[in-house]
Image (cartoon, rainbow, N blue to C red; front, top):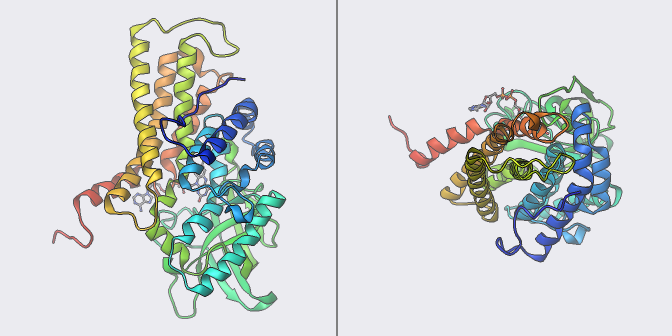
Length: 418
Ligand SMILES: Cc1cc2nc3c(=O)[nH]c(=O)nc-3n(C[C@H](O)[C@H](O)[C@H](O)COP(=O)(O)OP(=O)(O)OC[C@H]3O[C@@H](n4cnc5c(N)ncnc54)[C@H](O)[C@@H]3O)c2cc1C
């Protein structure tokens, strides 16, 4: 086992005691458990269940569950730095853990910042306590399958998955629809899905999004399709179908209308996908330095660091790494409700930078280290494949970030050219 330095140095980045504790814990679990298993889960395209057992035992599954509900009460920045440490050792574990943790962060810290009626806040408090108890005490795993293969996951149209209110069985919803790329399919205990509420005489709209946790074993839930992708293979992101699935009222992860408010007022919530890729960026750099110094464990101690071209490449990688870290830290530390325009633009810059730099770093690492580094016996080729997936994640794909940035920088709200 190696003993890697923290991605975010506690003194340089002024980490709190909680941040130091959680990031150290993640790094320890990553080095001891995730790294040795990563190749096997990747090769088999299997969900990393053993990693989840270890993370549950370590208390990491409730990282963003409020302290009063038995969790660590981590905020977005604390979660993100911890997830980056895990992503360094297994991208697929960190990415799937993101889906689970977001289900608690979004319903916790983030929702608390939004306007709600007293009644909504009280009911939300009661309902989320049920979800949090399952996670902290029973080890329940939640996922976040939103994508449907149309424009809904990009935030442009209403969800094609529908929820019809019902008074039967004590009240709740009847859900019908389909979610694609549903990471943790067949492995999560609850699928946290977004649906359009069906209202008599009204067209489905994003304002009426309903966010519910569907039990994986509920009648009418099925998983289909193969999962044999290029990268992030351990995420097992297959297709989920919901056919007349009943879910009770208490399954609601947010009160009616609050997801829409969160997405509009707390846009940094969509940055939760990038910590896994921050970790991969660090991993590509770490590998290159160790390899060129002839210090990669298990390989002959051949030094390659004396070539000026290698030194130039590593200089470029170090610059890219520090730029990525600085932006990541700055943007996640300023996340809050109702950010100003510059903060929103910076959030898109950060998503774009982390996702694209992860991929660029890993391809540079392979070119610099040479042919042996792309063998499947070493982690770099997996990091290369995993890191390419970051730019594809909706709602903020690399392309959509560019679109948003270009328009956002040149136009003020309501401005038109004609
Ligand atoms: C490893 C992995 C795990 C995933 N896990 C999950 C998960 O757990 N939950 C989940 O919800 N999703 C998940 N996704 C899905 C992901 O977020 C995207 O929904 C999916 O990659 C979209 O597939 P697509 O590019 O074919 O989609 P399309 O919607 O067909 O988009 C194609 C391209 O068009 C662009 N595009 C789409 N809409 C617009 C627009 N309005 N304006 C401009 N350009 C646009 C996109 O940038 C993209 O490049 C996962 C994806 C991967 C790769």
